[in-house]
Length: 417
Ligand code: FES
Ligand SMILES: [Fe+2]
Image 1 (tube, rainbow, N blue to C red):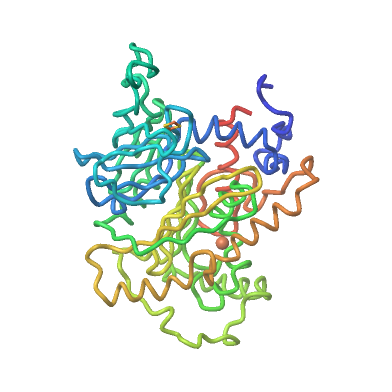
Image 2 (image 1 turned 30 degrees about the horizontal axis):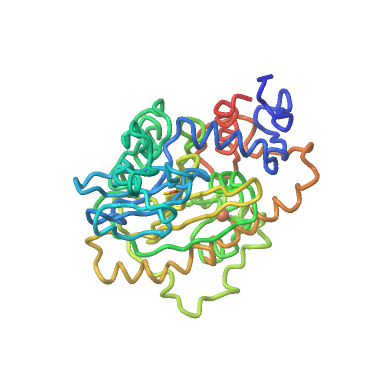
């Protein structure tokens, strides 16, 4: 057992990642260790789209894990990021969510130390004192007091950041299939349609599990089977890259008819074909826009990003842990710069499907909270992750928890437990 491993992180012996101790979902010690080893470790974390930083001087405040970070576009047009903590006495420098610095400076409100877009210190009021008195020591060197800088990469118009020099290049980090799907969905310049934000009273890893879980999709989300967006008998499956990243994809055109009667008998609670009708069926009107049969794809780049195409809705979902019992989920909805007006209207209407109150996504926040509520005093118990067997990796069907088992395999490696 590693010397710094908290007692909560003892993994049940011989479980093949099929039994995760609940204590790791509500322990502050585990949370702090995750911030150190995962979010501050060799991982790429989603920060922004480039479209949100359109001009020299543009900036956006966000987080890596729970560390506040500002992403900027400098006067040289390059993208930079730094920790939003003043080098003087630690105050938050940038207090706006996004905007434009007209003079390219970022000035702390407390004593007005001023920094540039790169995070370098440019000005210290009264550095030389006043009337021969006070001021900073003569050998005070501004270049020794830059903000803590974040290594960034702009991959196909999406900005990622890492605190570690050891994080591999972004495509190696993603793995082949996640990189493929990333390229597929970033097929042209994007336009941000808008954001939604929600706080979820649950541990952030319950949501990571949720987005790798095809088993729940036809059972929890009544809307899915009722309106034919998703059934377990459709084509598709889950692909795992580098243990912790995954792709869940659906092909409506490849439904296995022979599985349909089983789906109907197993889904008695949710399969209500013909019972419910949409008052406005144009909600689900849309158009095919990719050169393949994939109608839904949800892929995750651990620890901070989930990307989805569900019908014609496209979004980045950023997972921002706040503490062991709470995370913020920031949705960035997008289309392409060359969208027709008709396509943009499809996207806008279909936004009713996703986001905090989405017809097919509001239950995910709720189920995450249900888990958090129920485990509060039962950290010594474990879950049961045996759907689809005990193995890890890729599956060509939906009745599996293989991608979740893979997540825990990778998590244990990252956390060294
Ligand atoms: S804390 Fe920022 S200038 Fe003093
Ligand atoms: Fe879901």
